[in-house]
Length: 154
Image 1 (cartoon, rainbow, N blue to C red):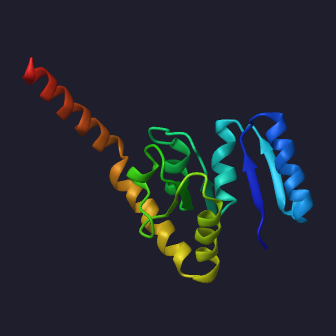
Image 2 (tube, rainbow, N blue to C red):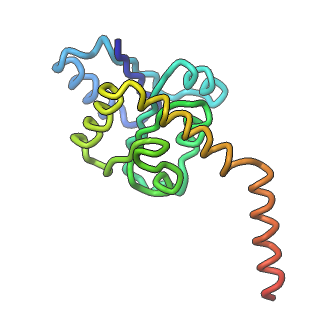
């Protein structure tokens, strides 16, 4: 059975709107509104899920939640805004959709239901991406190279 967990707090009026929409569509019992979640609870929450939908319309430089979900082996469906497309490659290690495009988001979610092997393939590739690109060693190496370039240029 599908279940949706909505994390994060926003304007109370927006949550009320979402609850009303869910009630009208008859899916309110399939949705859990968690509100603000402390960081220390996130690993357990991620472990209890298979997919993270990151529908941000903001140009976030690189959403940490996307990285964390990928590292935990979740399939990530994210928007094409901000830094998300720099780590999430459509059809390779996740699924990407245009911000504010609910129809394409629904189609991407449907892909996961239609092709039962796709979620595992994407989740494994996502984890490999994070392990390869976001290790402490790699970040230190990149910082050292940057500082060497800056110092050498002055």
